[in-house]
Image (cartoon, rainbow, N blue to C red; front, side):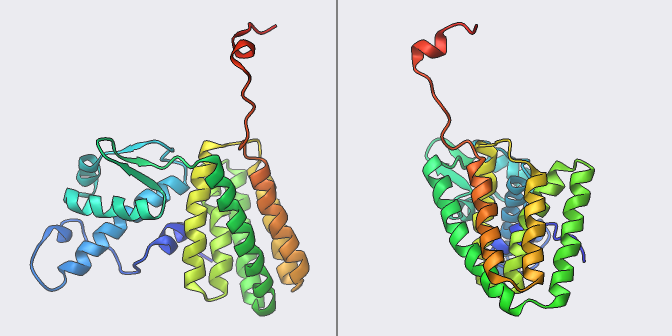
Length: 257
C-alpha cells in the first residue's frame, strides 16, 4: 500500500480536480481557465494545509500574499482566494491591516474539537466493524508498519503525517467522502492545537493505540473498538497542556531556590 502522504490535505479540499500549472492559472482566455484557476487555488490550499499538518508552519506565522504568489508563480488574487478558503476551514485568520496568519486555536476551541472528534470517530469505528474486509485490515496493518518505520528513523514530519492519516483512512474505508473531509478538517485543526499545546504525549503511545484499534477491528469487536478510540482521543487531549498553571506575579518574580 502506498503511503497516504497527503491524504488529509486532499480530503479537506473541496475540489478533486488535478492542479493545473501555475502559469496556466494566470491566463484569462475562456474555456478551461476556470478549472485551471480553481486547480491552482486548490494547490495553494493543499500546500499550506499539509505544511500545517506536518508542523512546518507554526501557529501565528504570517502568510504574506506576495511571497506566496511568488512561490507558486500566480497572481495575488489566487492567493487571496486560497487564504479565504483556509480561513473558512479555521486554519488561517484574516485581520484588517494585519493580513493572514496561521490560526492560533483557543483552549475552548481545542476542547470542542476533541469533543467532536470523540463523537464522530467512536461512531465511525462502530460502523466500520460491521463492514470492514480482510483486505482493509491488511491495508491498516501495512499503514501501522509505515508508522513504525517513521518512528524508528525519528522522522518527525513523516510520523506526524502518518499518525493523522490513520484516522482519515478509517473514514474512507466506509466509502463516505463527506465524513473523510469532515475528519480531515478536524485533524488539520488538531495539528494546530498540538503545535500550540504540545505535551509529553509520545508518538510511540499513539502508534501503539492505533495498533490496538486495528486489532479490535480485525476481531469485529465494535464495543472494544469504540472504547479504544475514545481512550486514544481522550489520552491525546489529556496530555495537551490546555490548562497551564499561571502563578501570581509575586510568585513568578520570586528568585528560584
